[in-house]
Image (cartoon, each protein chain N blue to C red):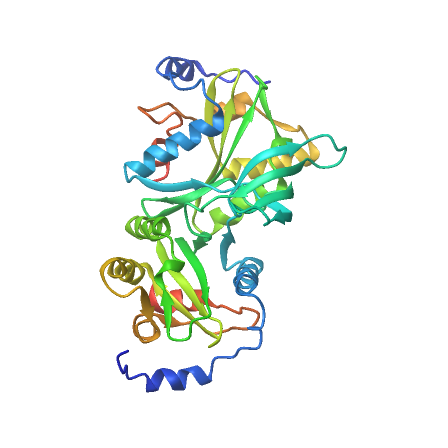
Length: 189
Length: 189
């Protein structure tokens, strides 16, 4: 790994509050989106998990019961919505790795989807959670694509140093465990 | 019902081709979105149906099998995405009624969601399919809200005459059974 000069970033890290970071990553994102929604800042929702329903039992008097179904591969990303008139699209990924983010965590159709969205004017990115480091990064889709394509011929992961260089660390705000709109405000709008 | 002067619209109707209109409404929308996607015009997807998963069987060697799950009420609309940099959000509804669209077909949270999206800069609307008339209309969320609120004190449906007046009839394009982007091009962009 290259010896990337990240002294300044290390100082930045000290101000990252991690009070709410104990919870599950998906919950952190959902709670952040709920805060944005309740405060009328942005309308961003998680898409439901795609399921192939095979058999439903309608016999019961109460609700229809699905008795056979399977998980389907998602064809897009998990989150999308609108912020200040801009279409927002992202995927959130967690890793226990401490030094790099393995590319195999991202599906090809998600990389393509993010590329297409960006091409049409979206703010498209991924959020990477290094759970054991308790650090969260915002990485624009252009780097996701770049490293995804690199992985076909070369290394199969994005190093933490690369993410520190090209990504933006996401801090926690009050009742916003993953305050990614702050990154968008500062770097996109 | 008011005697709305719709002679011109009746003439318009003659040019509405209905070659592909035999299929299920959801399939018509999905096929249209697929055409938009494949031709790099817009990135608009249907969200998966929200499911509450209760029990999953991991015993089998093959895929995990969901053996108990229930339908959840959707908290947003069915479709969203991006077109020419604009965030698009809509719900598609079908009715067998020939003279009006019953308001009960729309959930309150969907009306609120469309309002919120519009407020943040989205193009937000519903698409209504009168299946027995084989006519499809685009209705902006502002009218959806207006009639939704009217239904609390007054009539519980939007008349076809009102939809003809305030909505825009959607025509079928080549391999686009429900060419709603044409409406957006002509009336929003």
